Image: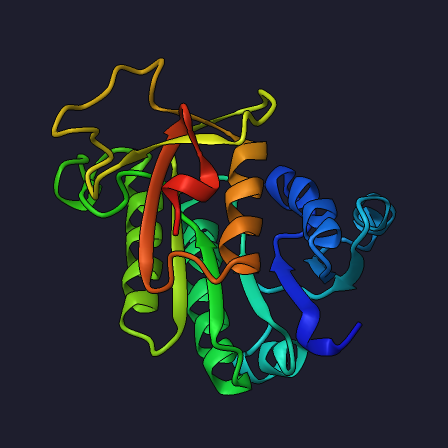
Length: 228
């Protein structure tokens, strides 16, 4: 297997990343999963990935570019987990931006980031005093930085994440997270984490949805039919 068949996942111990690693392996890729805590290495490797210990919160662009060089794609599935606005900005925005710049510097054209379905509009409709607002700012800023880059990106916008198994089928939403101009009810605006891993694998393995945002919930349309 050549280095060009390598995918680098940032946030490698996250639930989505742990589900994505074996899917990438099955699709013929090797996986470098980047983690901050070396104690997580065994779980990452059990998922079929190579554990790379690197704190992306402090890693400079050059260090990230060194890791990315020669890879097929970079996937940003990291997050501070909310609760601390400073860490949210440091990880979900600043580290994401450095990884985007590093991907371009390393000549890795394919980049996939996990955002959320209404990140494109929430900056204007979420109360700046809300505890959720720093996350909105971070995800919106990272997505905009990626759109302004030269990379062949895909922004994945799931709804509320669940632990349900993936059905392999999606319901596509627009830039506001709406479906057919209507805001779905809360039971509809959910996305299985495993489905996110499936879509992530699909867009890289099939060169699908380049320079596109894909907002989606659990649905009835097979991924390959919906995301091209």
